[in-house]
Image 1: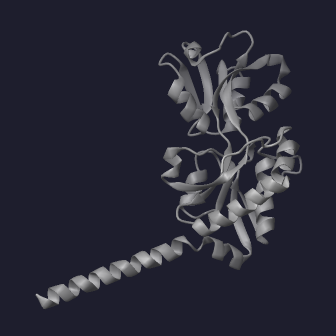
Image 2 (image 1 turned 180 degrees about the vertical axis):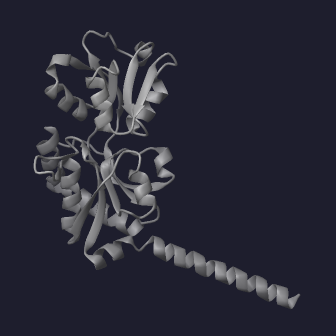
Image 3 (image 1 turned 90 degrees about the vertical axis):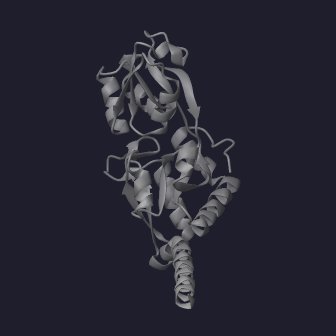
Length: 264
């Protein structure tokens, strides 16, 4: 009996040690970044004006500027890691990146698997289509085809309100979604106002217009679960940037409007 009790106590002690080690490891991201003098940040390259590839083949946009800004305030170099809507959260979970700055909206489902900073930029999504199609509410989507990027906030919000008779066509990234709409493969498209604006500017012959809002959804920086030290530091940087006007400057540069009220 004494031997069994001793083994039990030893097992409990070992478990506690493993928990302590796990907790310590979960808090190491900020220390590791500062030690390596490098932070890996996931960014979009198919989502102008937040992230896209310029004529010089280098990524640029609001999210890229934000990533470089945070790295600069940390005093480290930044490695920009292009991601898609579908793989940006897995990249965090597998520690391929330290942060995700890729038009990431916050919702209860995502909060179960990753953590979020305070908001850093405005964002809203809606349904867009040609003036020839009368469309004012989600119910009007019945019998119509609408393109959307798989796994995105656009997809989740559209799925909530689309009637069964709507034909939702999902594509793997934003470029494919927009290309399908422009090519006439879908009658409508669900996307951000910013992406739609770029699309309408490039394709004025389509007569595309805004139909209705799906969701107001500001952007947040994504972090791996348990990285409270890194999150606190990122929040400190973003809140100071908001107070000092730097976030507004970046928003005006890329969106043509200041950030406005952002949730903390």
